[in-house]
Image 1 (tube, rainbow, N blue to C red):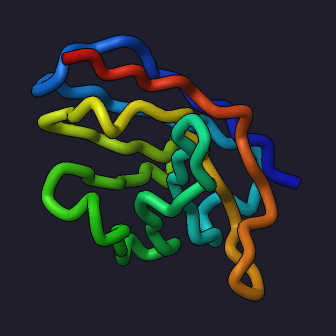
Image 2 (cartoon, rainbow, N blue to C red):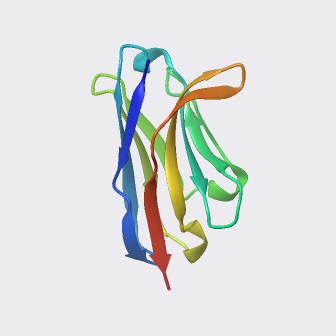
Length: 117
């Protein structure tokens, strides 16, 4: 079992930066592919980025260059650095853990990011 708790969201102006964190519990974290998703109002949840247990990263098409995913296996932490925030980045951001069969098995409760112009 893995429990995930996000933090670091908030209200920022366009052009600003945020670093989201996800604290994981359980012994599987180091072996799991982890990811960040987001869901904007009225839209479906979408993949922002994911990172494998060895640090290999991938990003959704719209996030290249502004989003950086990272992890600290010793601390059981997952991070998402977001730079040059845009109004359209406003969403609830979710931490997801342990990809299996193409589906993440564990989810956090989400952290709200609101970007104003």
